[in-house]
Image (spheres, helix red, strand yellow):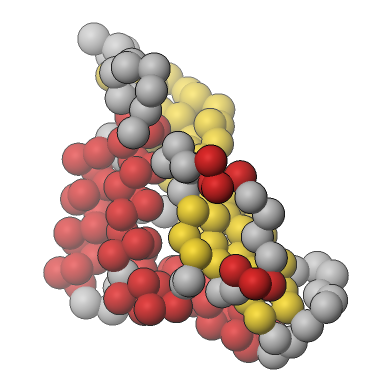
Length: 160
């Protein structure tokens, strides 16, 4: 995937784990015709349009870090996501947001525990994701929604 041949950062590991969780969720897999997560494809940066709908693009962003332990710090990993949903029924957009939340926090407790453990193994501090800014479209027009949202979680980075 990466072309610079650098060690994988904890944030990269956690982002890719979330990418796989979302991609492998049966509801989201059946919903999205286009799923972009910046894996090096030149098409990753293309504009999402109604012809791509329904579509999602997730983009990682670093956040502030704080020292929690003498040997490690904890930093925020923000995952911004863009959604394109066809039509003008806002219920669809709300339901897509819910589907994303359920992919991260499934109803089955054992599945939920597997996801938390997967994220912790990848480098997440607690493995719990907050939907700090659920997806919404402030200016719906042209008979489709272009919504943006954000989730975040803490990532632990060992320095020793």
